[in-house]
Image 1 (cartoon, one colour):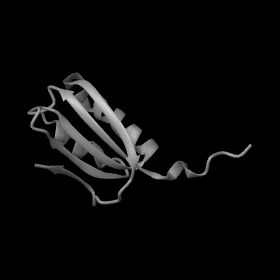
Image 2: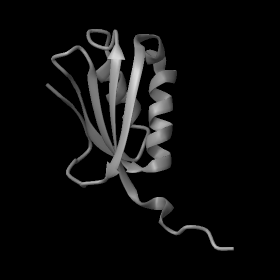
Image 3: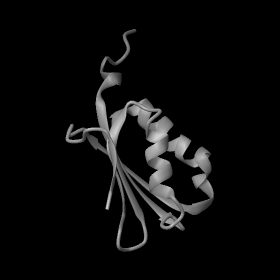
Amino acid sequence: MSRPVSTNARRRMIVYFAGRVQGVGFRYTAKTVATGFEITGTIRNLPDGRVELVAEGDMAELDAFRADLRDAGLAGFIRDEQVMWADAKNEFRGFEIVR
């Protein structure tokens, strides 16, 4: 039995974090955590109080990055997390905080 070949395909993960996620160092922590992963993307505050994370990379890297965000001390601030997946657009260079 053969396994699917495209497990290394780059994907785009879009996550909307709700809770007490602004004014607590959320974006800066995410940028620091991102340096340990082979991912690119952006993170920014939204006017409605949520934080939007858009990251691209291997699906396993993205899942591990999301888990590490919680482990980096952010779990207590997150009340809700909406995750969406799409094909990577390869438009990012590095991981940046957007203001």
